[in-house]
Length: 221
Ligand SMILES: [Zn+2]
Image: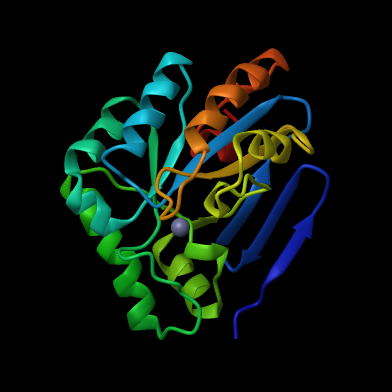
């Protein structure tokens, strides 16, 4: 049985299971840093649009990619890396990891890791489990392989087809230093992520926020 201890305060939530870190946010409270994250891509259209917007605004983000999508769209994956963004693991087939045995957990995460490494020899030790769901087997795998589990503190709900103005409200309702913002560069239904992003980025800058990758956020850079 794995001991799981969660420490919650105003600016940081860290759960530790042996050496596993489960991060929802990470900040000292007054540095005005946020990490934008995009899950489920790469996608040939939506990832490209998002990368264009990020480039225009000189913003770096973290993309939690699905291994099979990296294999379908290697050029888009290469572009994410070439433009200086961070990449994390979102399993090979968007597999929900709870209830799986250790071999199945390992296969789902390693498959994505292999796809990522195959291109650009990029390696990551950031895992975002699909749905944000994890259990003891997932934590044990992460402990063994030195993965940090990265969740989020602001859910834009773009995955639910939420309008751009509602996404904006979801972001600004509780934004604070150290927040990790959940968005998607692929949603199976019509999403308004890109439109919302164009509204959100200038406003966050106006408020004095700086955009960092998840690793930079965790490391306090
Ligand atoms: Zn996902």
